[in-house]
Image (cartoon, rainbow, N blue to C red):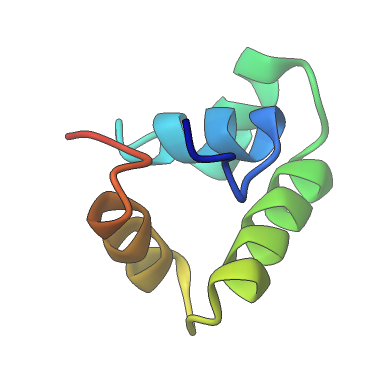
Length: 68
């Protein structure tokens, strides 16, 4: 099985993002700060070499790491 490029927390954040959850909702759900949520999103965007959340979601879908 291929190792995920995301940490388990980054994966959780994006799983919630595709459910149309806001940064604040994700933070509350996971019990972390909104800044931490934004950091996870930013780290993922950097890892994927894309320019934003939307492109990150598209790329993760292409990689089979998230499902709609």
